[in-house]
Amino acid sequence: MPSREHEDLVASLKARPPGPAPDSIDAMRAGLASLASVFEKIPFPEGVRQEPVTAGGVPGFWFQTPGAPTDRAMLYLHGGGYVMGSVATHRSLIARLALAAGLPVLALDYRLAPEHPFPAAIDDVRAAYRWLQGRGIAPARIVFAGDSAGGGLVLGSLVALRDAGEPMPAAAVALSPLADLELSGESARSGIDDPMVGVADTHLMAAAYLGGGSAARDPRASPIHADFKGFPPLLLEVGTREILLDDARRVAERARQADVPVELFVGEGLTHVWQLHPHLPEAAESVARIARFVDRTLRNRA
Image (cartoon, rainbow, N blue to C red):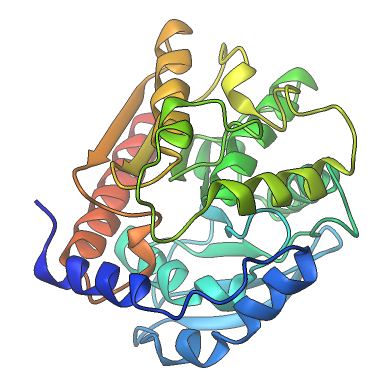
């Protein structure tokens, strides 16, 4: 059962004045920009240093903690429907993951659509991944992680790496992944009361990402259509109060069919990417769970 803090958050989200539905990517970005002060108020944990970096030509930030090893790393990809969001909107979550996992985290400000449609974001992930390897960090010591569209980008990048014959990372974490750009899952069609993500908005963002093309079923764009053979261990987390519930469930099933080790956590009553909100007990539990998964996976690959 969700915590009181979670239900208070949902109530506050639902109490926002409805206003006109965004009818363009610019309108969506303006709406996110209006929340800038909210993101600035989210506590940034002590003991984490954030430093700008260019990784293989892709801008981003290192999140470093004292005593963290230099021979392993997490590569984090933020959400935002492929059209908005940034490291800045996700910096608290990324810092908490760096602290809990005891790893430096490279968080990317990958290129966004519609200015840079599919597969530009995947190309950026691959470039940054090669850059990490060029710094002496072996693939077996790198973990991919991301949320929402960033979670879909994690999975789509694994497809691209595997199909190109490039080495795979040690593991991957996808939080509330957007893994089906057609939104064909029952959870997207059933009218789930998702206070964070709407079907119409997601269709608009998906169209912008695809650039008007017909790649919605390309497994790099919609990983539910991928063959997961050769994938590393996966941790998937999703809530029952979100339209992307079936994306995560179907990804888990595809992974199991390919004999990929997969852990699926389904949070009863939880909403989209609840991990962003550090005051929620469910967020702390998730970050700790991710840290245990990462530690266990990297030790198994040592």
